[in-house]
Amino acid sequence: MIHFKYFFNHILLLFVLILSGCGGGTDDNGNSSGSTLTVNVYEQYNVPFSGAVVQLNNDTVGSQTTRESGEVVFSIPEGSINDIHVFPPEGYDWYSVYGSTETQLSHYVYSQSVGNIPQPSLFSYIKISGTISNYDPANTYSYYLELDNGALYSEFPMAITNNSYEINLRTNMAVGTSVSGKLSILETSTDVVTGQTMLTDAVIMNTRNYVTVEQNGIVTTQDVSMSNPKPLLETMLTVNSLQLPSGMIFSDSYVHERRSSQLNFPQYVYGSSTTDSNPVITYSSYLPQQGDEVGYFIDARIPNEGKYWSYRNRFNTAETVDIFPWFVEPLNFLEGQTGRTISWEFPAINNQSPVSLDFRQFINIVPSSPTSDFFVWSIEIFGGRNSISLPDLPAGVIPLLTVGAEYSVSNFINAFHVRTPGNIEDQYRSEYVYDFTIWTR
Image (cartoon, rainbow, N blue to C red):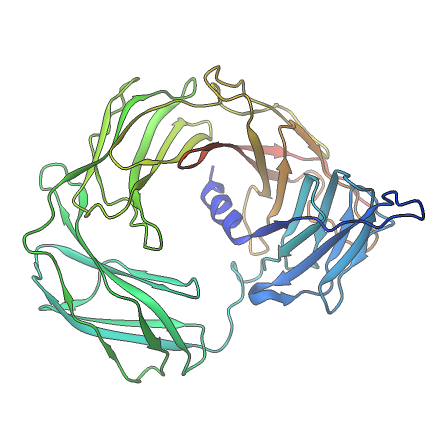
């Protein structure tokens, strides 16, 4: 369905940070008397957001509204499990979390009016230029600039004249800001037979300082020397056995190298991918093997049903692995639902799966026909439950959903299990359209 890509990106933008709980007080006998739940609501750049109504569970009377600090505090029983709902004023998306045991939650509101988070008015430029030694005009070049403040800039392809390049990055930092970072130049070639694009070389420059300037400001010079001869093709990962959930068809897969404190270059690998029911897939790359892990990604789907399966994991470099789904069947919403309750069938677990899994689920509700006032109600669910009930609304909160209107409901289920060298993530995605009969006040 049309909202799937938006949903995945939106989850990344609606960053929710769950922090460890703070302790409760004690009575005169030293017994625990309860705890507190603190909810902080922010705009981007950690600016406190006022005017958001925060509701605990289905208690419409006890809801609170954030003021200048963006914070509200509730008294809760020690160790309690709670549902938390954040209702910003019109023009912002809604957020709910079900089954939380934590005592502090931070939420960043998302504006509907501009289609993304508002950007600050100030801006500046990072300007870099130089020459590329061993430049091959038949190949394509791109760059990554990773700054120590967490910002990442990239361009594909780069603008190159002869063997000279120039980078003009617009940033949201003030003019004169000094920031350190690493510039990486990537060289890719296209196989004339398969048409696949492969990374044939990558140069990671030493960390250096950059100073943001005005549009016509001073340019930083960085010359680059690519490899000559080019690196040889090396095996990154071999998938000896690949099982898919029942009814699923192989869609796409790729790996990328993982490095400590260095960039993870995505997707530029050569893979002998196949749609066989039990394929052996070998992934190789010209990328110099400087790390000890690779990230593996696989996507499968059931055509025309809006059901997707994604597998995310990381393995040792050059490891041979068997991959199987923890959920043997796709996730299914129950048909013909109306009203505030949303239910789904939790998939059966593969008998090869570990006994202990940590489940995290995400639901998104969006209009089935997007308009200028397009919105998202994002819902996060802890644990393996298979239904939720949308809450009653506090007085003064204008309903986001309209009686009798159609909404697209998407559900992700993430299952995590600790595995050396890292976490395995087995993720399901499914999307349906419902005709809700929504409550009114």
